[in-house]
Length: 377
Length: 209
Image 1 (cartoon, rainbow over the protein chains, first blue to last red):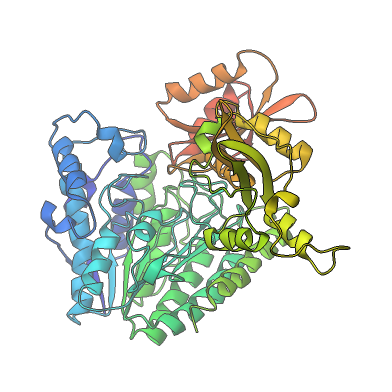
Image 2: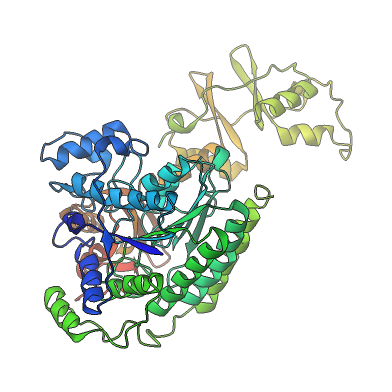
């Protein structure tokens, strides 16, 4: 059974009108599901308290965030990555970030208590938040807090990061942790923020060979993405034997995303989600926790997350997107919305240099398996 | 960047009468490849692990005995550098002479050693990532004020610049790679493109010009 987690106050994590991390992305999903008549019961989480964050974040960092979020000023707040163009200081942001983190942690608890095997948290996915630094729209790392909840009772967790940006915060927090494997698929840091996620970042100490990075070439298409995914994830799960998967389902690898350069279509996302769920069923009794994440194309992201929802709920895809929904949101976002859940086929012109891109990505599979082979014996 | 900032300050040295075998095991235990040889306070020579291996190799015409004092095989006079020399000068000398290290002397006293590894570390520091950042690759025409014009656009957008790297291209243009503190690189690239710069990365930037 799949359990949905959501709280209407999630949308208070709003970094400003022109900021790409926009709560409308989730509102559009919910509104579409309502319009389709298939929005199921959600459970409301409670906000975490500041002290609940200390398993992952430093005391000074949490104090600083809570203080500026109340509207007080702190002289060296930029040392914590705040007050920047990506992470502006917004009143009340700490509380709403703690509420969202509460949702992801609730998801972990439901898995632990065996109350559900599949969880969809309709928000969250703040994978850039570091132990002591805000980064890339993120302040509190809800994913790490949820993973920690599970490893605290001895679970092995595999974290799969499908966001187009490297999951650097989660990786850093668990870099030497033997109970957490992180696997991040992203556009190469040579080109894209945050600039990390290289293949040689493999973890350290007891966490060695448990942190995997697949830096894909710009303009990678879905077929190549899935080839790398299928080349690396199944052997990793076979070896590590997780008790649960945590998946950051950022939608910004879509070809229309304004922040990045990968070329996945909605059809590719469907295949990817079905594959991840299939692997959870095969390797860890179906236990999987999905969060949202990046995804800044307002015409694509709501469709991609609706696809994820429909797959998890085992519902049929609608033939067309309801006109009422389209009209309502076209007015609000000032953009035309497609008539269908899936992208047109073909969705874009052929990519030049495609064979080089495919070959380069294929090499990644061999390079990463070669790098970990001695530790995976 | 100066030699002083990249050199090793704890230099391991030997005296001219040290046996080849002792010098060899010292290099092994300390995991180093270069040994300055000092007599009192005076630098008299340098020996590398390669010098040692070649001198004692069975393939050599007349191999040295491993008990030989090191002064018999050391290189001298020694090419050295000064703590306040810029690293690019040191790099140029090492490249020209094809040597792997330079002792650093101040007032004729050995105060450090700089090796190729230190210069690679310096390169990493100059080009590398130290903070989460996005990448901008721009082509500039080679004339005064262009860089200032570019960086003022970035400043207007209130974006922090983490690193700047430039290198010359064949057609007298300058390539500039900037790492800047934002995830949303494209709107910045558009503004730069609109100001008449050629943006290489991100590609396909639509601008009005």
